[in-house]
Image 1 (cartoon, rainbow, N blue to C red):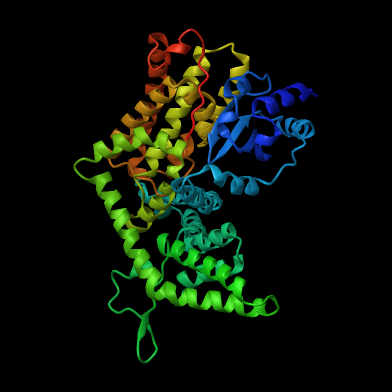
Image 2 (image 1 turned 30 degrees about the horizontal axis):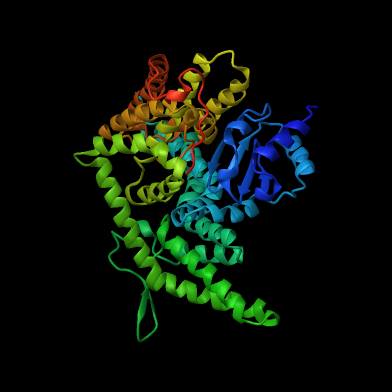
Length: 481
C-alpha cells in the first residue's frame, strides 16, 4: 500500500492549513474542499505533489484529483489535518458561501435534474430503438410490419418510454422535495396529480373538441394534464416545498403530522391547476419556440456555430445545466430535440483533444494517469476530468475542442439533426438520434473527432494559444470561476 503521509502533509500546507478548510469530503477520484479563502491555496505547489494528478474549482469547491486511491489518501489527510469529513451534500451546502446568485441557481437546477438523468437516458435509448423498429423502411417494409414478435417488443417498450417521459413531472416534483429536504411522498403525489388519467392528456389538448372541467358552481377548473411538461412541475414542486417549510415553523409538532401534509398538498394542487400550470405551460412553450426558431430558422447555422463553440465554457460556469430543462421542453413540444446532439458532439470534441494530448505527450506516465481515463470518460459523456484535468490546464486543446465542436454544431443545425431525447452524451449518443438524422450525425461525429485532434497537434507545434511563460514546458494553469 502506498504511504500518503508526506503527500497529505504537503497538501495540507499548500492548501492554506487546517484553518482554511471549511469542509472536506471525497468522491470516487477527487478530494473536495470548501476553503474559507480560495486564494490562499497554492495551486502550483499542490499540483507538484506526486499523488496529485490535477486540480480545478467547480460549484464553490476546490477539487484535487487523486485517482482511484482517493479513499486511502483521504484517510491519511484526515489524520494529519484533524479534519472530520462531511457528506457530499454537506460539502455542497458549505460551498454556497463561495457562489454568486447565478451559480447557486444553476447548482439547484443541476441537483434537481441530475437524479433524473439515468431514467431520461434509458428513455432516449428506448425511443431510438423503437424508431428503428417502426420508422426505417427496409426492402419489405419496417421491422414491426414483418414480425409479430418485434411488434410486441415495440409495444412493450412504450410502457417504459411512456413512464419516463409522459410521467416526468412526478420525477421532477419528487426531486425538488428531495433537494429541499421536505416530504418526498408529497412530491410524488403532487406529480401524479399533474399527470393523472382523470385529466385530458397534454398531447390531446390541441385537438380536443371539448375540455373537461371540474364544476364548482360559481367557477370551473379545466381538467388538463401536464404530461412531459417541465416548468409547471418545477413551479408546483417549489411551491409545495416552501409551503411545507413555512408550515412547519408555525404548526406545533404534536399536530404537524396531520396538518402540515394536508395544508401543504391540497393548496398546492389547487394553485398548480389554476395558476402555475397554465403559466408554466405558456413559459415553457415560449422558451422552446424561441430556441427551436433559432435551431431551425434561416440563421440556424450561426446558432449552431455559437452554441457548439460556447457549450464547453458554459460547463465551466455551471450554466449548462439549464439545457436539460430546455431539451425536455423541446421534446414535449416538438417530438425531439436538436439541441442535445450538439452537446454530445461537444463532449466528443473535448475527448478528441485529450486524445491528441495523449499522443503528443506519450511517455508522460503521470499525465497519462489523468489523460487516458479522462478521454475514456469524455467519450462516454463525462467531460469534467478531461476539461479540468487536461484541456483547460493547457488551454490550446480546449480551444481546439471548442472550434471542432462549433463546426460540428454548425453542420448539425444546418441539416437539422434531431435526437429523440437526452442520451449518453458521447460516442454512444448516436443511439438517441432519430433515424433520418443518423447519417448526418455520424458526419458531425467525424468532424468533432478529427478537427480537435488536428488543431491540438497544430497548436502545440506552432505554440498557438500557449501562455508565454509555459512555452518551454507543459503549462499548469488553474481556472477560477
